Image (cartoon, rainbow, N blue to C red; front, side, top):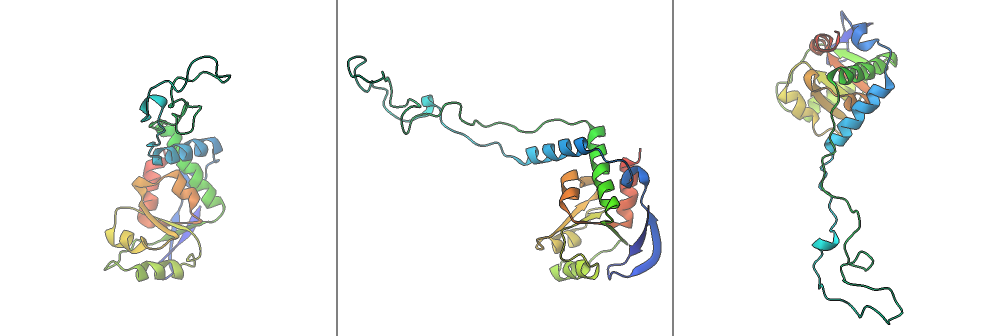
Length: 209
């Protein structure tokens, strides 16, 4: 798939870049995407939820009333789950939600997500650029000139660039990542994928195997 390369002003440079079919033109695997997104979201969970069991409740251990003759059910402690303020039965406990996925499956998921974006013509290739200083106005002008200001964008850089990253951080619909940190969730969550010419080469090296 051949795409025109734009500059940061949104004008065509006359150059074209070939998006490799091995990365941007495969038959998408929905189940691989599901598993990779599920793992990403699971890894975001802190897992610090906690409810007290009856042995952790502060309260007296005296017997509330005599065992027999009251006409009611027997009760041995105010900390019973049957009473207000008692312990909770099978309540949430701290746990780790993360799980393992094979590298090949995660690679397939990323290629599937990128292929979906390519099929819908939601990929824009920009020549490599840099900002002289950290200015949100600079990044806002970039997405405006590329006609994607109203959409969620994911800019994929070939290497970390602090000026570009910090310039985008205050914009609600903009996100900047490096090709090495690309994940399936971010690709699917964005309306438009902005690739630099350098990041296209890195993605080809990483996934076109």
